[in-house]
Length: 98
Image (tube, rainbow, N blue to C red):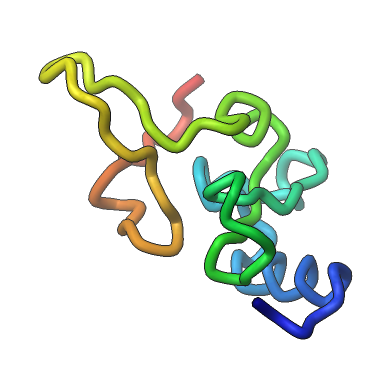
């Protein structure tokens, strides 16, 4: 639990992420799309370790999910967690990709 107000938490999350979505790495400054504070685990509370900055698209697609079915193994695996997982171990940035 934290003693920070919601506005202080939002500022901490935004500054920690440098204004970029922690899921897809797009910058609020480049897209003009307002980022949002996402609860990585929807039931995990407002601890800073459970919060990340998310663009609307990522936040809307993730919703309350914490697991996904791996199409290769057909097993449930955790979604990417920006507090625990290395982005470059899970994703690849392709310049100009749409």
